[in-house]
Structures are given as structure tokens and as C-alpha cells.
Image (cartoon, helix red, strand yellow):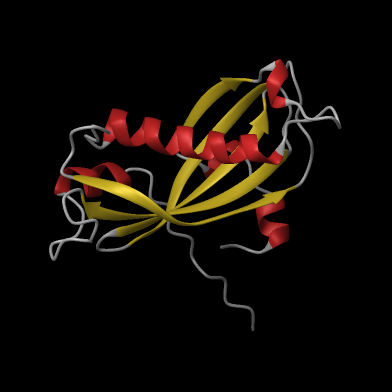
Length: 157
């Protein structure tokens, strides 16, 4: 994952897919901002919406499904009801059976990113709970490649 400062500078154009989420009164906690648990809900929602719409995932019927093996979030600013959150998605790493997503939460109408999270799926066979020898399906891989972002490393001599 990128450095804290680099993540804090993320913009919508750094991502390939964005989903709007209208915050709810119940999303706020006693501090009057969206509770940290809601961010994980948003991360899961944007990832699975993308997988269903663009990668052929059928949650109850696909032979393979993704298991979350890692999640992480950095928070930079608050968002609270009644805001509209824009949940942005990209793929940072694509392996044989695993994928590393980066998800950002923006507030509609504001430029600064509110939070950036990382979410790792390992695709496993439904019947065994283990990755297959061939990895994820071709349809899944093609869909994920569409939002893959490859950042070049800057040479600092």
C-alpha cells in the first residue's frame, strides 16, 4: 500500500469505478460522524457490486467466491449524515488467485479524500474453500484487469 501522505492526496481520477452511497442517520455514531464500521461495509459493497456487474460473480451460484484475508483503513477526515459518499475502487495488485483492492471514500462536492482502505480477496472454490490450481476464472480476471492501476516507481537519485 502507498504511503500515508500519498493516500491522503488521492483524487477521484486515481480510481476506475465509483459508486454513490447516501449516508443514513444510523451511520453516524455518538460523535456525529460516520462510524468506522460503516467504512468496511462500504468497501465490501463497492467491491461486490463491481464483481457482480463487471466480473460475472453470482454470489449464491458462482463456483468461486472471494474470501477476505486482509483489510485495512486510513482515515483522514470525517463524513456524516446526510452526505453522499462516493466510494471509489481500483485494483493495485492482481495475482493468480488473489486481488488487492484500494478503496477511497470521498464526500460528494468536496475534493479531499475522507478515507482510503485496502481489501484483499483470495478466490476459492466454493466446494473446497481452497484456491484452484488455475487461479481465478478468466472472466473474473478480465473484469479486474479493467480497473488495475500500475503505478511506476519514481527514481530518486
